[in-house]
Amino acid sequence: MSHAIFLVLIAFGGLFYMKFMVEEKEQHLSTMKAEYLADQKALRVLKAEWAYLNSPEYLQTMAEKYLMLKPLGSKQVVTWFDEVPNRPYDSPALAIAFQNPGGENSPLEKISSLPPGEGEEP
Image (cartoon, rainbow, N blue to C red; front, side):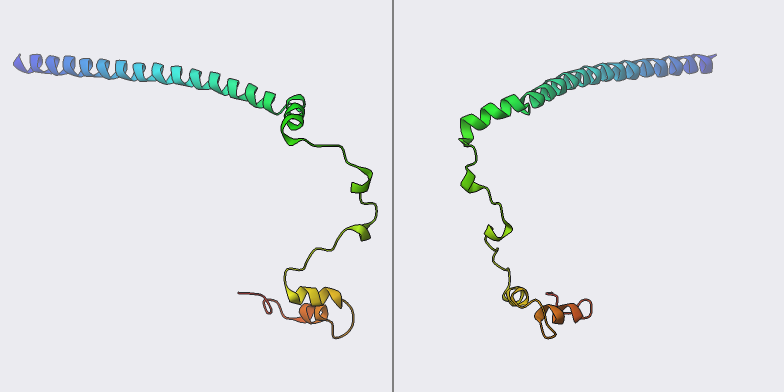
């Protein structure tokens, strides 16, 4: 008889502990749901702000206010490729190569005839 009472007490203790843990988990779940809903609301607000800040009308007003851009003048438009200034070469070897592009002894011919991996900087 004493063993049965002992087992009943253990069962009641286990049930009480399990009930306590379930209530704790339910409280944690409800807290997480509330945080999730708050995050979703904040995300909707941020998306609306992003859409407004990227709208063409808003960008146009901000550009006019802060950038002080003016329409292009006719002298600013390049019509021929020759009018574009040449870009400076990154290295003297490239400058020499592009100044003398043809011929048997040209630097470009020498560079292109190297085996793969040679002539590259480490």
